[in-house]
Amino acid sequence: MTSPEKTAADDLESIARLAMLERGLLPEFSAAVWQETNAIAQAALPRGPGIRDLRELLWASIDNDDSRDLDQLSVAQPPADGAVKVLVAIADVDSTVKAGSAIDGHARTNTTSVYTVAQVFPMLPEKLSTDITSLGQGQERLSLVIEMTVSAAGAVTASDLYQAVVVNRAKLAYNSVAAWLEGRGPAPAALQAAAGVDQQLRLQDRVAQALKRARHERGALSLETIEAQAVFDGAVLSDLRPDEKNRAKEIIEHFMIAANGVSAQFLERKGLPSLRRVLRKPERWERIVTLAAGLGERLPPAPDARALNAFLSKRRQVDPGGFPDLSLAVIKLLGAGEYVLKLPGESCAGHFGLAVDDYTHSTAPNRRFPDLITQRLLKSALGAGPAPYAADELGTLAAHCTEQEGNAAKVERHVRKSAAALLLARRIGQRFDAIVTGASDKGTWVRIFEPPAEGRVVKGFQGLDVGDRVRVELRHTDVPRGFIDFAALR
Image (cartoon, rainbow, N blue to C red; front, side, top):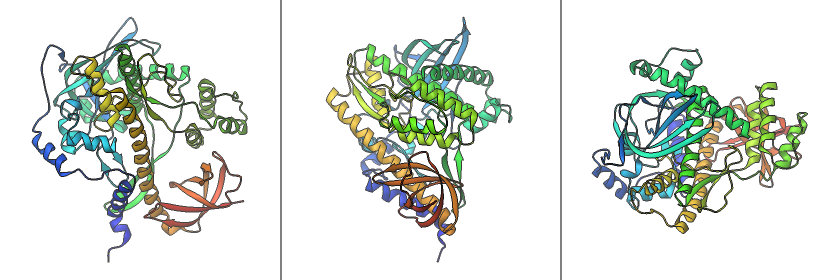
């Protein structure tokens, strides 16, 4: 009989599939999807008067080491009067995945790729998302280009949007690029092989940092959490390690935030509806005020993003080791983002955490259905076809995408917890330092620090609230259900 450790990857994959089905997500593609996929032989590369040829530019992608579903490329053109023109190319998935097709139907059902520690369940078949609709290195691909002029102060002063053919000159990864940018490692091989891309990245890094400073001055929140990544030794789950931010990730983060703002504003100027991504003002602001007071700081009685960010920035400097835990508590108290229909001329909530009024999701159409919806709306605005969705349908899709995003997050969290339960199964009775991450009528949850794992407090939870530090004892684990039970020690 094989030991559980030797089949950990298989066990976690089975748990993930079952969790998806329970949440209304499809872990498998239908026969109709495979039939359509097999009939697609090559990438769409239409030429025409409205499609520019930008193949000569030094485009590059930066993503995770093992990512092949590449949604965006970026390039920066030399500064003029202190301003830099940044171009972000988004994979034109719509040219291959037609609305109403079986492939589109699967994407519309799940609305997102599901990233579990055991396996990635892609929104689109991998033949498409990692090849035909991916902006792979050395491949000519049709894209939607978002062009932005960024001032030295980090403000987007002008923008445009159009279709173009592009070529990825260098497929790069976050960690190696960050090490090079920060002087901790050599230039990655792909960077060395593409003449001029190194200067490109230095320029893009400078622009991204300017965008970052400007966003935080407006009140965008400086948050930093610990996301546990499973580490396998063959089929054996050997560890959970935190996935940390770095300077290369910030290039993509700040370029994508800016590009998503441009997309939302472009649709508004064209008088078209859009699918906005919003994060409303936090309902549990009073608890955030209490957290700050417990650290000797004062926040205003009403939600104020600038004041909250000033508090967070100070805490990052005062207690960098504890900052991820404070960030996690604040994120829990801020609540979840959602998709809403924005009709032209009507008011709409903005994104409290990003401190922006106009924001959509448009930069990851291989991985998120809302981005594919937005891409179709943008192409319609460019005159590439009739309006793809009626307003009432967009409203229904907004609610569905919000629900399925939540379901996908619950599946991902379930499998992370199952992996953590598997790691902790032999440590019953051990004690850990923890932080309270959730507290409601449904229960109280904590995250221990080593390994980074979350579980429920089943004893001694009275009086605990989000952000409290507590010592806990591990009482029980249930791998299939992802249950980890603790008792709080007083």
